[in-house]
Length: 422
Image (cartoon, rainbow, N blue to C red):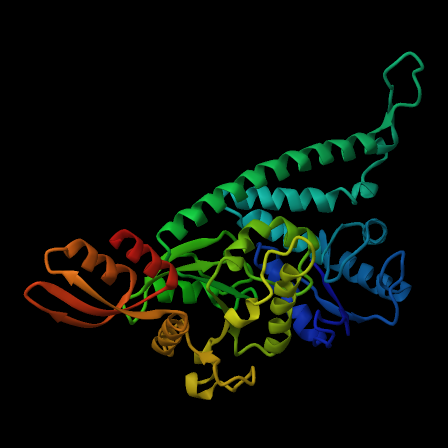
């Protein structure tokens, strides 16, 4: 196994990531699916060679190390064209995959739900459709055509591409059904409108650990890249007594394969429907600023174009959380990395700062609430209980005939309550 990190490659935000950090991330990705790393190296690139990406000397040096270590798999931390991948496999005499292929392998291993499996298969097929050039010579054979004139028929590579295309059409239809089902669930939640808080962030920023800390759930959380892929939702209760739904989503990563951005659109739709987007960052990571830019870059892509899933005002709903404060010595030691006093530092592992985060979420959700006064007949306990469930009761005065309450409600809940009272 040989991760090759071309040095000086630009990050999504246009800046330069440290080559060592990129290589460490590639090693972490490979190790997360059980690959044993026996050699790693950084090759600075003066130019990208169309045939092999790397220069002749670099290809030979890598080949010698691969032969000495008897390596069976080489991972190139860059995007390879089908021709480059084929040529490197011939030179190194081992299987070669690029960054996109590695991430797809991880997603394929980790997806657990039916939706996740469909999305991963679709992304794999989209990726493999352009890689048939790497296959063996049987792909050049032809099958006889139909009709009276005969003709050359289809070559095996054309048949394979057609079969992949047909399977992709079927998968897209199944995913569309998944999206419709998710939409029905979302509309059902709107009928009992709890606000939704969606967690987003770079992979291994601690989203699932924070999710568990806030909800008490037992979602799988591990110190590895892409520990969890499938979306999870749980209810939480905020300090005011208001209930909300917390949604954990898939982690982002630099150079996220375009196949996955599209294939996981259904998963990311939970972000589009969220009242608050909680951007979780690893405050202790040396590349935390670049990771932030990667996440915001993907969200900007979701908000642009004819098929945008995020509205134009999504940035106003973002709350940044600087996680893993325990690695820096506590919440007080976390620097103001975003230049915004509203950023909240926490440690999901120790629980430090979580109360401040809950208060901030409560305050953000309360900003759009309306404060109203009602006089409820003392005998109407059901309506009074409804206000306690859906709003924040600020004041209550019990009389002989009725109960006077001052309550904070969302505009939708106020309309629903007053409509049933009419």
